[in-house]
Length: 137
Image (tube, rainbow, N blue to C red; front, top):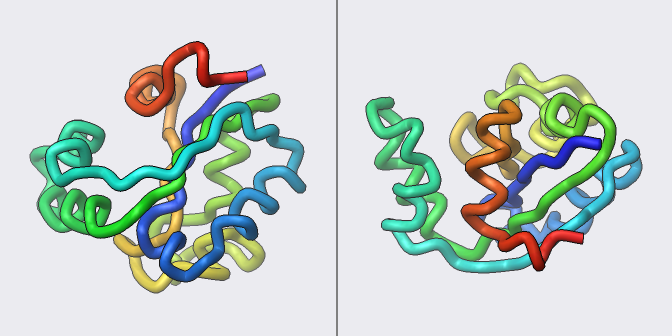
């Protein structure tokens, strides 16, 4: 059983689609093992997305991620990382398959409703960024 991190980004919280996002994960066999809502500071967003520091979108991404509350969750299940990425859809909602979270709710490539770990290494960094071992069921 794999674990991965997913985040309902500020646009998803603002659009009030938290439940719909979680439902899509659960209906596809994933279990929520930890969940919380918080508001990232700009510095916390920069630290979380440090891997993208040299990318041209780093500043706008971290500004966006700190503009409002987010919902962070640990999802568990077989092939959780690839399953979450499939359910989310392509980063650019214009390329996202019908029925995916981003096709349904995202407005553009940056305001794309959800984040999901892209590898075991990313999940190993991202999960403890938000959750202690005691918080994960």
